[in-house]
Image 1 (tube, helix red, strand yellow):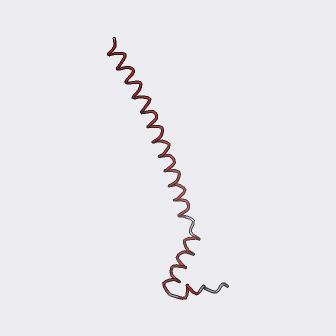
Image 2 (cartoon, rainbow, N blue to C red):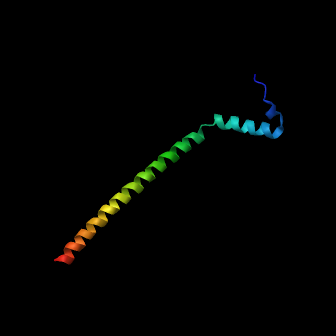
Image 3 (cartoon, one colour):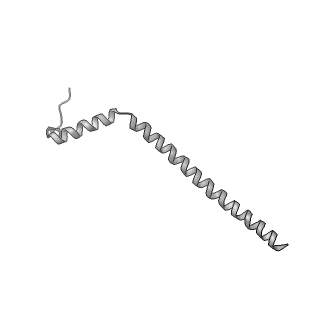
Length: 71
């Protein structure tokens, strides 16, 4: 059995150390973090594709408008 560090002799420090120990053992937060990262990557991919697609569509509409106005 490990002896507590001198910092853990205080009641508040002991509670913080116990909370940190419990957080390290709890794996639910890891799964939530992974889902958050996946959602962020999907959002970035959507934003990039919409911006690129939007630029291309705007150029096509300008080409069509020029062709219609020029005839």
